[in-house]
Image (cartoon, rainbow, N blue to C red; front, side, top):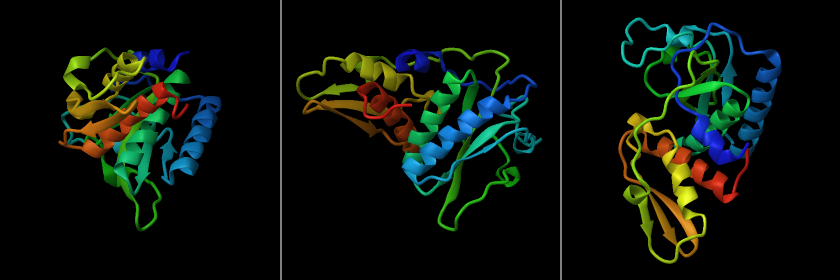
Length: 214
């Protein structure tokens, strides 16, 4: 499947079936997480059949159902975590799983992760078989985010389309895509979780430009 189509198919899912992820799929996902850790220096860890992190009765916003599997993004750099976390999200989609980025609505005290003294738990990604595959969200247009400072790249619209498909905090899409010197720069407009968002958008951009692969 082409990577842009994979990005289009992937939507945030908060309600999951009460169904375990098969060991074969777990093994493939774990192998990919290990590869991402080796490339990035992150300490990403997957948890399966572990429901406690999403059973906080005090959380009323963004409630999850059967969120019994999740991936903990652990490391030093939030942008790097966003970049490699999104690669894992797209790999999970390729494996037939659904996902959701989660920064606030889980119980951090219940996540039984291991970390070094200079690392932190940045956020988690739920993963599993969705009750539904999610839905498209409102999006800015190419003209809203694109800045062209010289000649356009041949596949510029496809690159920007991929960037607009990237999940961002509260779907605010606070970034700009700058085309200059036959290259693309992704610039953040700031806001909450800006570094994580920047990494996610850069991942989409690099996948389309062939600078990285799944």
